[in-house]
Length: 127
Ligand SMILES: [Zn+2]
Ligand SMILES: [Zn+2]
Image (cartoon, rainbow, N blue to C red; front, side, top):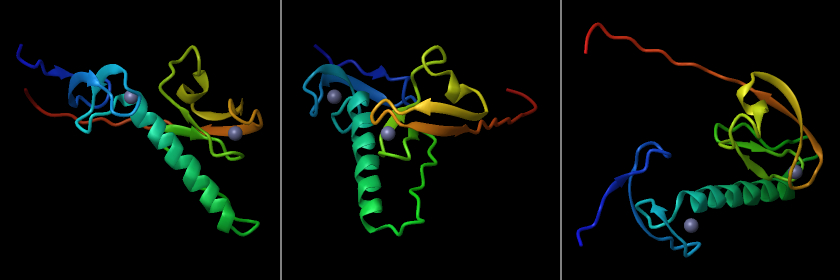
């Protein structure tokens, strides 16, 4: 049977194939490196957590980890990266500009989330 290429529209339209993910061993649509998008997210979350822990091992008392991100809400207490693709109903704070108070799902401490939304427009004369 010929291999079917399917467009994975979730992550920037990258072409991907269904197969067994190298990391979680589940049958999923895979990125070109053989891992599913969930594993990509988890690897990024682990990387942020590692960076966070390493930062505070070396940091002076008044230094703070840079939690600005376009992909995750990063807890300033524990470095847990909350995915931001959960949808409006579960997570309205990330769709509304301004400051919001949240509880970190990992360490349960309060954090202030500042959401900044930017729009981009481009026009042209004809198709
Ligand atoms: Zn996976
Ligand atoms: Zn936390």
